[in-house]
Amino acid sequence: MPQFTQTDQRPTAGSLAHPMEARQPESISGMVDLSHTVFDGLLTYKGLPPPVITDYMSRTDSRKFYTDGTEFHIGRIDMVANTGTYLDSPFHRYEGGKDLSELPLEKLADLPGICIRPKRFPVDCDAFENNDVAGRAVLVDTGWSAHWRTDQYFEHAPFLTESAARFLVQNKAALVGIDSVNIDDMNDKRRPVHSILLQNEIPIVEHLTNLSCLPSHGFRFFAIPVKVKAFGTFPVRAFAIP
Image (cartoon, rainbow, N blue to C red; front, top):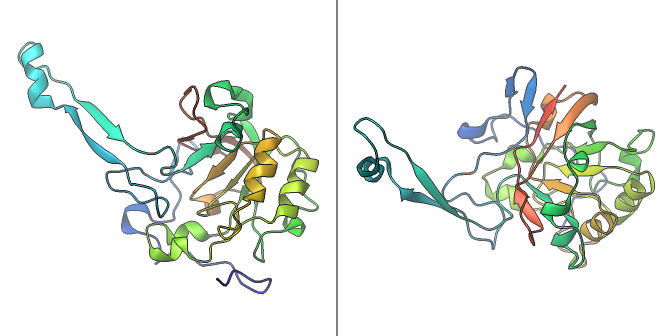
């Protein structure tokens, strides 16, 4: 299957974005929302089932437990961990790796961020050279989230090379995120980028969005999953504060 070559250009945003999620700033009190919305039937990754969101207790059913005028809703969601914008911990790849409950908050929250906008794909070491990535959340803005919720999103998507992953480890990146369907080449069954980063306890965030709203540096990044034992991946509400 053909992949991006060194001459391929960044995809453009705008009309490709779904009306529910146009690529535009979502800023409240200086915060930029970098997450996709999860809803019933959302397809995040081909081959994985979409979430099923239902009522466990409807507002109508709850009324019998309370005084007149008081009602509550309790929802139920059945979904795989890799849904929406999510974070991978080492346990996702390695049986003995740290799971979500074991990740320290300092690995996930209030990280100094840097946003890399590569000119060529796949994303190799040259995209990160001359940038200080040490201790930072390194977010790769490929523009690919413009294809979210389209068939194109799953075809020939940008990814990082194995060499780029080794570069990020050697230069002590704290976390790596991307606005694409997979940080790895989906045709490479070894999954070298996941393997290298997670082996070195560098969390990965995939399916980011709105990265174009961020400056290249000078922001703080947050991506905190639920603290689940024996789980390697979970959706996050990723956001940044410029």
